Image (cartoon, rainbow, N blue to C red; front, top):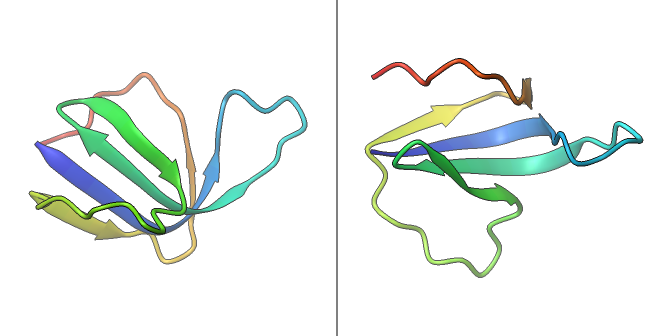
Length: 66
């Protein structure tokens, strides 16, 4: 399953300073495939697209529901 979270503020776990990225997060088969600006990336066919409306996404251990 390919899921696209767009128009999001993303808090990656790799940054110690709390830097928030504005852009998209793509999930492919349960794994993160892209974080940030997809500028120039080929858009695959997504099974689901979610507009985050500027809300914050952060990493969790909870599986994404179908």
